[in-house]
Each structure stands twice: as C-alpha cells, then as structure tokens.
Length: 392
Ligand code: FAD
Ligand code: SF4
Image 1 (cartoon, protein in one colour):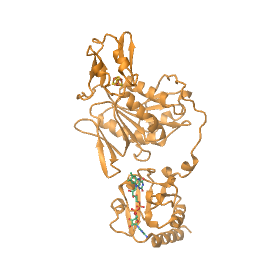
Image 2 (cartoon, rainbow, N blue to C red; image 1 turned 90 degrees about the horizontal axis):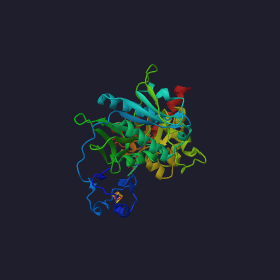
Image 3 (cartoon, helix red, strand yellow; image 1 turned 90 degrees about the vertical axis):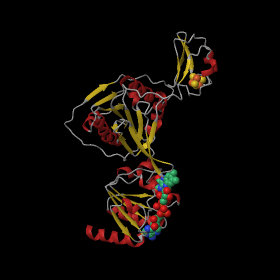
Image 4 (cartoon, rainbow, N blue to C red; image 1 turned 135 degrees about the vertical axis):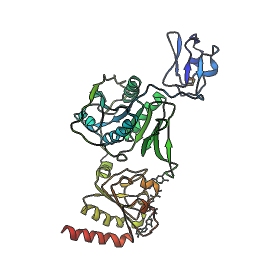
C-alpha cells in the first residue's frame, strides 16, 4: 500500500474519513486505517493537519526481501485438475530450480488428484478442501489466496489465463497492490537481479514486451493453456500436502446453476493431436471441406485464422491465435495462412508445423518444419489422395 497512516501521528480525528470519496478510511481503536477499497487517488493526503498520511506513490520502493518460492494456482473443475495446472508446474519447476527455491501448488475445492500435482513437480500443495470452493467464488477465492500469500510470502505466483484465472487473479493482485502480467508466452529469471522476466505480445502483437515488477512481491503472471510444456512426470515423487483452513463465503455470490458452453467445448482444438487450419488463402467456406477431409483422415480437427473467421467461413470457436485459442498439437498444417504474429502466438509451440502457401516469402515459412510452396487447391487433394492410398 503506497498511501499509509503514520499511527504515531494520527489523533483519530476522522477528518480524512469524510474526505475519502471511496469510503476507504475507517477509524479503528482511535486510529485511521486504510482499507482495501483505497484507489490511491490521493484525496486524503492534504486533509490531515497532523501530517499523519504518508504518500509514497512516487517514491522508489525497496524490493521486499523475505519472499521466497514459486507458486502456481491449480484450478479444478468438478474435481478434475485442469491441464494448465500441470503446464504451470512445468515452467514453475524450471523457475524454482533456477532460484534454488521450492515449487508449491495451491488447490481449492475437492479433488482426488492432489498427489498428481506432486508427481508433476510440486514440492508442496496448499489444499483448501471444502465444498464452498468447488465452484469459482471470486470473493472467496481471492480472499483465501491473498491470505495464503500474506502468510507464506511466495516470490512468484503463476495462474492460468483461463475463465477462472482471468476472473479472480486480478482481484488478488489489486488486493496485494502488486503488478500482474496477463497472457505471458515466456517466463524467465533475470540472472543478475533474480526478477521474473514476463514476456508477452504487446501493441496488437507487433512487439514482444518483457515486463518486470522489480519493487513488489509476489510477481504475478497468467499463462494461457497450451503455451507451456508439462515437465517430467515421476510417479515416485514425494511432497507435502498442507491442509488449509477454509474461509467462510460472504454469501453475496450464490451458484444457482452450472451450464456448460457446449458450442465452444465441442471444438476441442486445445486437446487435438492434429490440427488442419485454413486462412484467407483457401478462398471461401467451401475450401474448408478439403480441410475437414484431411483432418478426419489424420484423426484431427480444423482450425482457422482470424481472417477466415472474420469472413464468416467458419465459427469463432475454431480461431487459433492471440484472440482465439492457443494450441500445441503434434502436427499443425497451416493452409493459406500468411503467418501474422497474432496467429503464430497461438500455434508456434506445435511439435511439427507444415505450411502450404503459394507465396514463398510468406512469414509462416519462418517457423514451419516443412514448407510446401503451391496452391492449396492443388496440394490438398494430392495430399488427401496420397494418405488415402497409404491408409487403404
Ligand atoms: P492473409 O494474411 O490474407 O494471408 C493469406 C495467405 O494465403 C497469404 O500468405 C497468401 O499468400 C496465401 N494464399 C492465397 N491464396 C492461396 C492459395 N490458393 N494457395 C496457397 N496459399 C494462398 N489472426 C489470427 O489468425 N488469430 C488471432 O487470434 C488474431 N488476433 C488478432 C488480434 C489483433 C489485436 C489483431 C490486430 C490482429 C489479429 N489477427 C489474428 C489478425 C492477423 O493480424 C492477420 O490479419 C490474420 O492472421 C491473417 O489471416 P490469414 O493469414 O488467413 O490471411
Ligand atoms: Fe481514500 Fe483516496 Fe486516501 Fe485512498 S488515497 S484513502 S481512496 S482518499
């Protein structure tokens, strides 16, 4: 908190209470106290005749020293731990090893898979096992995570850039008054300072920005599913599970019903092993027929660039990229896709990338494992025929 009360000087006169437009100052035991509602607007600073309000907003803050360890938030849905949690453990393990510190996971709700977190790399799991935590309750989740952070002081906190992570992690960062870098595509440790280098596309994906939070702890970052690779699985790995006392929900949020968005989930791009994607170069909605045929032959599914989605050739649920899904299949076949950076950030960690494009200078060839220069309308039928011959 960068606006503070000097308790020694405060007389409890309550002048500042009436000045604060956000009702963020309360009087407790005859002293002013700034609550979580403070927006740092600074309206109170001049109001105190005793000079008891300290404004440190523009001052250099010394890096807190007693924060240690890397934490990941392991989200679950109906008891099943999300795949992104294991991916976060993969990168978390690397960061923790580099910092020579421990890797901890935080799990809310109820799950039979707690031990899996240890087998995938966690040294400890802070487990709040309570029915109140089974579904996301933003208030309860953020309050509990803030309490855990204040009690144990991790240096780094990672979470999935998922519906759950995006919903409550910003509250955690705001309550702790620390920074948050969303949708990171790379995370590294600065060898000199030990700061977390949080790398993500910026300015519409035109540059890759490296963001640091040198003066506050924990350093909080979210990562989209499928961006990081899982670490090593060791069924013999041992760790500690620490049961954490649940907090009471405020009751202001009630889950009335859970409705799955099946239209989005049916297109299971994120778990597909093979994706055949089409861009503007396939020429129209009928161009997707050949893509489906090839995808079906290879046991995969169909993706698309934003240009193809914007043209209305295929629904948004198929879009790959910065504003679509991030995918990491074993095989990604890009058909008539130029390779704009916004598309690449969603698929460049695929194991094998095959690009078909009639322009030999298309940027997609810079990241392709195999490139075919030619017209998709000619190449795709040939490819399908060859695979059919091989299959039959
Ligand atoms: P184009 O760039 O038009 O490329 C078509 C390609 O097809 C060309 O390389 C051409 O040589 C080739 N071609 C043409 N005809 C043939 C043929 N007969 N045979 C073979 N090749 C052929 N894009 C995404 O994909 N996903 C996103 O999530 C996304 N998010 C964005 C977010 C922001 C904020 C912004 C600003 C942009 C975003 N974009 C995204 C858009 C992105 O910048 C590109 O415009 C888009 O990816 C281009 O799609 P495309 O490659 O299909 O089309
Ligand atoms: Fe209230 Fe603004 Fe002072 Fe914060 S800085 S306590 S919001 S008046």
